[in-house]
Image (tube, rainbow, N blue to C red; front, side, top):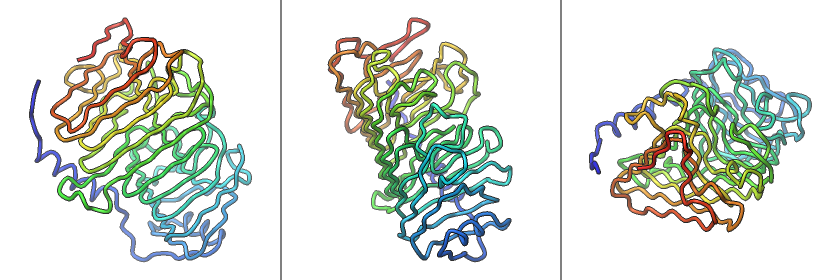
Length: 361
């Protein structure tokens, strides 16, 4: 077992994360009404937009350019429904000039009620066009959201979380190309260190592609298809905490797909990860096909690094044939964590490794 630390890599990654997710603005735009908000987010200049009042948004805003929306401790109430536009409040990023988007400092309620069964539609509070925004980075900081649907859908884009983020969604929390949970490796008291809680509850079958309705916390796009290296990666940095709970009580497919994290290629854990699902908690992409994560092993990986906390819990006793971790080909690299705790109370295998080139180390 290797015990290798990479302090320079951590420091460089920290500096990049600090600089790559900011938006340069000359002056902030203060808004107090829905019309003000629409105008500010659709003008061409890069801008920080700050709420001075609670706002009720009952339409889709197609964001122009790079914007940072600061709720300033206010409430953003979204019109609810199942529609790409209509009276449903949401933010849509579908332009090539959408390279940075930020959302911070407030409480959001409502929005689109659909789940990932409508993955090809404009769902969630923030929805990203499937192909036009491969370079987009969205930063979410100190946000709470409650809805019957989901929060973020960006199949080909990256999302970064900072500060205290609480997502209580019936259907899904986040769908993205890559996810980063910020942590300052040099300061455990940094208020920007991520404290993330994601909860989902709707009963249903998300399926192997994570493209069905039903509670699912974090998911990545694709199952068998080739995506290339550097994608479907989840990073939890030192001093970041992530807790996920999925109360989806479906019994379809022996609860294999109602996961906390689905279709991942790599999980890099330097901070804390605590997951709880009724069935399988973690599920890799189908890496018996060349999924191209670019790892040294050529397989999916969970890298549990020194001082980190890794906890998974599958609570069901029956209909649990696929274990607490369902993998097609996986390396679990454990290097002197603070806590390593995996619990499974079902009747099937503890880990389920598909017969085609399955491996757990």
